[in-house]
Image 1: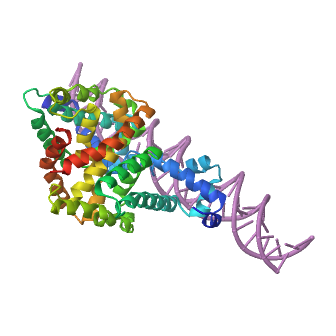
Image 2 (image 1 turned 180 degrees about the vertical axis):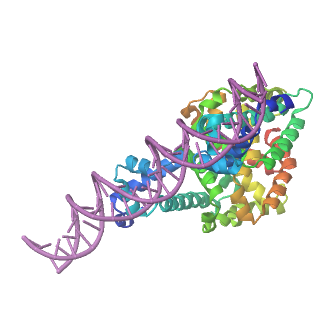
Image 3 (image 1 turned 45 degrees about the horizontal axis):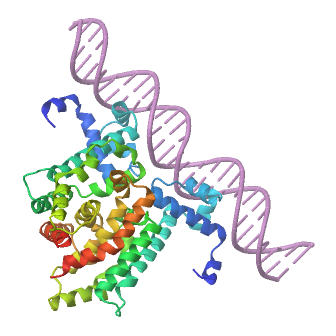
Length: 206
Length: 206
DNA sequence: AAATGAATTAATCAAATGATTAATAAAAAA
DNA sequence: TTTTTTATTAATCATTTGATTAATTCATTT
């Protein structure tokens, strides 16, 4: 966010949004109260309604921004026509894992709240772009050339995201059965940055 | 549940638990009110506290039972020492996908509520059993024999569960970008029953 | 049939929660 | 400086929500 756009927003407005985002991500929409948000952002309760009208509207703004930011980051790698499919695999594996390590609550939050509110998702133009990306095209070319096994591209994309994202959503379970600290867990996820591209290639290569 | 154990529980008790489970799975703990549960199960509000003392306790009972049932089903396949690793892969892929198609809200619900409450998970003996199962042992034997690539078994197990479970958690997204109905989506998941074992084998085979 | 205990109901409580209001302080414009 | 607009505060409202109570019905035992 540059200085110009930042100037548009008051300090309290930003404080409220930051606190609200943190709380929504940690506890979800329903478990977060407006008083939680007021306390956490150290502002008067009435300020929330003054700037955002209602808890629901505040949530929807945060949801939209978070989703938009997330999807933008997701798509970035996919459309670089200079890199090979294998390079893209490496890049996105690294990038997504770094992204989720930095904000581990994001995937669960997004999937969770999207489940109850699939409408807000309609407005995102980024969504369908993944399937029309250079990345998918490269896979399909590989299939034509006979290098890669043929399978519906949606499976291909789903599998990649599955092995990247899902382990984070299971982190409490994995940490428990393997006796890992948060730090250990992140090391394990970092290991996967290199492993995942190999696994995916093995999955598709003839 | 057989007749004997069933007789222990009154009709209303079961009605409350069924309605509560359905609501908790759909809306989560916080978004579900005791009055929702009373309405849905068609009982008097006071009955909830009469049989379960509090909303929290009702939730914990449901959570425990649901988790126990889920984990039990999960582990069943893993310890059959008559079947090969590849057979087990097929079996669990089919079984888990059928299980989740029958109750698609389960994974999100469990992972979600476990995030906030990792303690209840400690009591489950089933949890750590997966890593000590015959299934994992067979993989490690394969590694020794030089048939399979060596990787920490936790990655092996994580990958399998990832490609099975994660797509269900993304169902709203997948359905949106692919323009699928619920039925279409389930067909796609059913396709994966056969594909997943192949993918996993390709991932590990030298 | 009478007595006892369990199940059920309607009414109510106290606390929590989203939201508003009226008064005040701070900042910007005149 | 004065006026006007914007931001902030404490107090309050109306609902909602989890839980309880006292009265009543139903089932079981004696």
